[in-house]
Image (cartoon, rainbow, N blue to C red; front, side, top):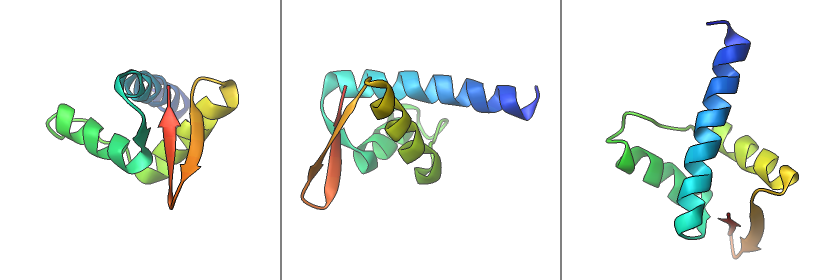
Length: 77
């Protein structure tokens, strides 16, 4: 699979996973990273360098809202 298709597949999978986690409860980026690893028994992990651009992209599309709370931003689905 070409790199562009791999990136698109990752983005789509990660976006669905993040949105499903945010349906349950508001979470910070750190909480999302931890939940993804725990729920998949470490089979699926998202690096911070990919999660935050993903969250900001979802926020730009209006799929999630980020609100700063103290030192961390809380995202809602």
